[in-house]
Length: 412
Image 1 (cartoon, one colour):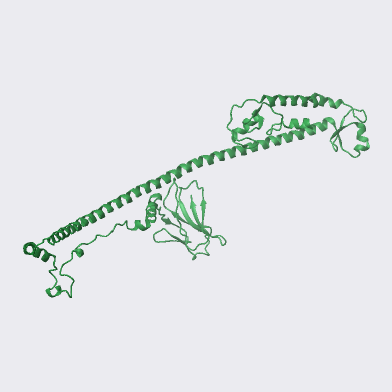
Image 2: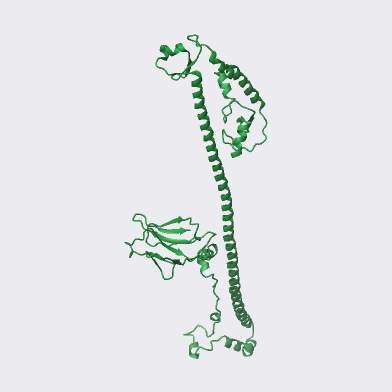
C-alpha cells in the first residue's frame, strides 16, 4: 500500500503518467515539462491550483526525476514485456496443462480445448486465438480512430474558442478606444463650455461691479460734501462771543442753512406742527444699485441646458428617410417620412411583406433611427437580407401575420 501511494505522488496530474523531465512551479505543483509547456500556451495558470504563473525556462527537478525513474524501473520488473506477453500463447492451461488455443468470448480469457467442453465454460462462445485477436485489434483500432477524430474535433473547437477569445480581446481594445475617444469629445465640449460660461460670468461681473462702483463713488461725493458742511456748522458752535457768531451768521451761516432747506416745500409747511425741520434730506437722492448678476437659465438649470447643447455635439443630425413604395397595402405620408398600413386591400392577393423603400443609399458607417411605432405593442424587429444583385438600401414595412405583426426594419 505504501509503495502504491509512493508511486501516486510521482504521477503527473496532466498526463496521469509517471513524471518525465519533471519541473516544479512556485506554487509547489510539479508536472512533466512537455505537459506544462502545452498548458501554458493557452493560459498562464497552474493546471492544478489555477494560480497565475509567468515562469519560463524552468529547471528540471532532479530529485523527483530520480524517484520517477526508479518507479519506472520497478514497473518494468513487475510488468511482463511484449515478447513475454506474446510468448504467453505457448503457455499451458493451468487447469489441464494443454496449449491455450482458444479465446472464450463470454469470459474474455484464454482457454484450451478441454476448457471448451468443461462445466466451467458450459454454453460459452469460443473463437480461435488468431481470429479473436484480429477482431479485438479491429475493435481497438476503431477506438483509436474514434479518439483521434474526437481529439481532432476538440482541437478544432479549442482553436475556435481561442479565436473567439482573441476577437473579444481585440473588440475590447477597440471599444476601450472608442469609449475613451467619445468621452474625451464630451470632456472637451464640457471644458470648453465651462470656460465660455465662466468668461461670460466674469464679463457680467465686471459690468455689474463697474456700474455699482461708479454709483458708490457718486454717493461718496455727496456724503463727503455733507460731512464738510457738518464740520463747518459744528465749528461755528465754538465761536464764544455773540458778536463773532452773528458776524459768521451774516457772512456765511445764513446762506449755508438756506442751502439745506427744502425750497420746494410751501412756506406754510415749514412750521413746527407739520415738520420737524425745514431741511431737505439728500438720502432719497442716493439710489443703491442692487445686485442683478444673473446667468439666465444657466443659473438655475445649468446642467439641463448644457446637456441639451451637448446633444447637438454627441449625436449626428438625424438622417431623414424619404420613403417610396409600390405596394397598395401601405400609405406614405405627404412628407414621405411616415408609413401607415392600409386595410382597404386586406383581401387582396398580395401577402407577405409590404415594403416602403428608402431612396437614400449607404454602404458604410453606423446608422440608427428612432422609429415611432404609435400604439403598436409588437415593437420593432430587424431583418438582414443578402441580395447580391441589388444595391444596399433601407426599408421598413409590415408583415401579414395574425399572431405576429411587427414593423420590419430591413437593411439590404
